[in-house]
Length: 403
Ligand code: SF4
Image 1: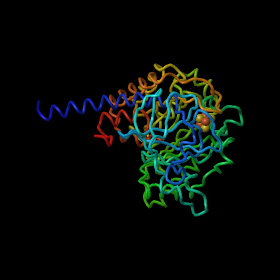
Image 2: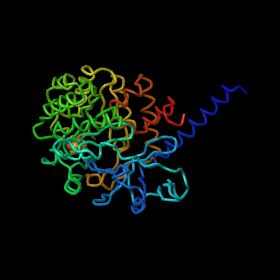
Image 3: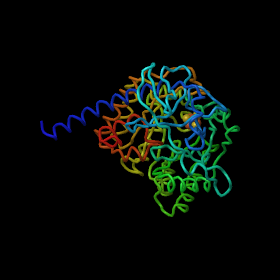
Image 4: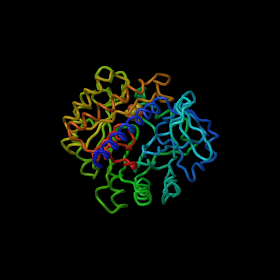
């Protein structure tokens, strides 16, 4: 057998092994991880290792006010995992002979490495706010800004049923000192994250603000970042609600955002009405969200607009119908698993099985490849690059460190 044939076989086997790992990752996403929090005493959490900070959503399956957890870890192959705590999970992490090991129902899987704390986390903005509380950092080199930590839809009893932004604020805002962020704080933090930690993309989001004045705020943020970085294109995604007047979308492009996100959440019109009552009643209804996405792609271009689905609330076929419809028009979709967050109206419900979500990820990926979306386009529109679909790109295109 020639060396080439041998190499091809090895790569094929490696890919099979990595796909298996992504199946396990889907289990971890759905079931979370059980740990005894005392095992983290060896980690120097909040000094050497990155700690969770609850800027907008609690994603652990139970609230844990006052108990620190790490954010994320990587496997030996370089696949990134969020740490999601679930005290009832069969997947566990233990500290054994100076290393952390992941187990699935008692079977050892692999040693893991928790994410180092970003360098900028220890800095303060010029008005003395901790940068770690202004923007979070994902090891896939993405910076996440939640400029507000509440949603005005709650005042009318119209917040989305899967969302726990307001509940997260009630539980964590005081003890973790989470506040609204001003454009200068954001700009200084983005600069530090780009320069000290190699940040490559910033995703700016938040709940609805009263009277929908978000466009002025987003323009101020873009100007402040451009001034701080000394460059017009800062690879920013503005995450917005569908504006009543669609021509407002042009202003985000003019302001310098490279990409735009408008989260439709649900493709079935009737389920959308029930699950997203505020998006239905305050923003022109489901059709207006679709119109906004189609308008946005004309302004921003193919592969520069995204939406997101809370995958698992509606039938898979419906979500895929939406993914395909939008992809054919140049719009990317996030299809990561619905996590029935604590404090949301759907707390206590169950998301579909890990196999269901893995299958959705594979089908989403196949649609993306068919229309020609690149990994770079998907990276630029995503809040972080650690979803199952990113992993499928990274395996298929041999982008993981293990290759
Ligand atoms: S619009 Fe919906 S998902 Fe977004 S913050 Fe408000 S309630 Fe949550």
